[in-house]
Length: 508
Ligand SMILES: Nc1ncnc2c1ncn2[C@@H]1O[C@H](COP(=O)(O)OP(=O)(O)OP(=O)(O)O)[C@@H](O)[C@H]1O
Ligand SMILES: [Mg+2]
Image 1 (cartoon, rainbow, N blue to C red):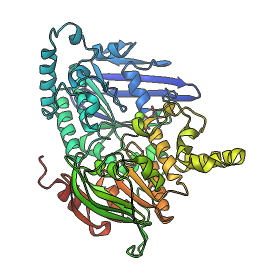
Image 2: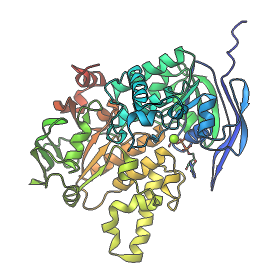
Image 3: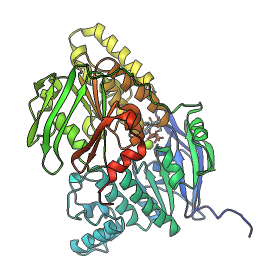
Image 4: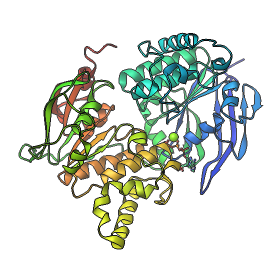
């Protein structure tokens, strides 16, 4: 016997996938063992999602072979992949908003046609699966479209479990989750792998790799540049330089140390209350200041941003810009007063899916470009190209349809739009600005946000990553169960202190 590795469950060899103008996969190899968590890493656009779509039967490869459980397989479509025992949780969750939780879980399921004679059976099974995932509180009859992002994630996971898969592929499952939710996800993953199920795990949060991963494969430009490295002993620096081909300093830009107390107040929020979400929230953002909100998903942090921006109507309280009240519950009024917002669910809320990269980047600045005709079109394109380069959007082609970009690159497009900044922009609101963005591009993003503040714009942001809030913000508001429980300078706080305040008293 000796120490020979177990037979792999999955072997992919020489997988090639060509899209018009892009070779997304250029001969990728991957092998996955039963019961392991195999992390798939790589920069935005490296080919991770394309590889797992091949595995899910959603894309047909142009070349290469797949051996699953010892036998060559052809995954002609999603059903074939599921039958083979491969379940996938996609980056852009493929749930149907108008259907119920239970219907989504068993959508396209054999059981949906044969096994369940009554809806009650499906709902009972759904309840059982949700319970196994630690989310018995999600009602099987609830419309999926009405669940928060973390809830949708759980439904997607329940669907994967419902297939008794031998391999579960998760494309950035933690991107929409906060700390406690991630712990729950990891508990589920450990249960699965303990039972011999293999997990392919994609994430841009490198610290997770060390917590949950067994081995790591790194993709770069459609090739595996490292395969099956041990997850716990390979250094972050090594992984990052494999991903990027260079050494990236994972640092935050310098804060300017001058006191901001004398700067004019851009935003003032007074006793803002949205029943069921948050209560009596007051704070200010001064010119050139970055204020960060830290809190769990569900703590009310995103709702606070949305209410400031007028996307929700508060029951009480006021929002003032430059000392004058803004009409509540009216995003048009917010925009006219100089607010801009990159929302949390960027795909559904902020992307023009039919547009090109250029159209999506320049849309916020339309008023600026509109009146000057041809000359300004040239300037517009120059601005767009500058943003593409600054954020390393790939491929760097302004004319490309935005939907053909990888998930992370689509995120960058939406952010580029706001980071371009308009002459009228006074306050920029960012919900999870780096979600899905790779480590290489994050530093650039931080610098751009800091640069906007340097121009006197106020920034209000939410991030689930506490180090990001601490590194980027001047001032931090800790939100717990709809209340601001702490306000203070970022430099006086550390991660442990903030996590403590975030979690204290929360039902974990
Ligand atoms: N349907 C498509 N049509 C054309 N090009 C595509 C399509 N899907 C993906 N691509 C291209 O293939 C390449 C790989 O994309 P993929 O989505 O696999 O990246 P990724 O590694 O998952 O990145 P991210 O971390 O941003 O999610 C990118 O250059 C992308 O633009
Ligand atoms: Mg992807």
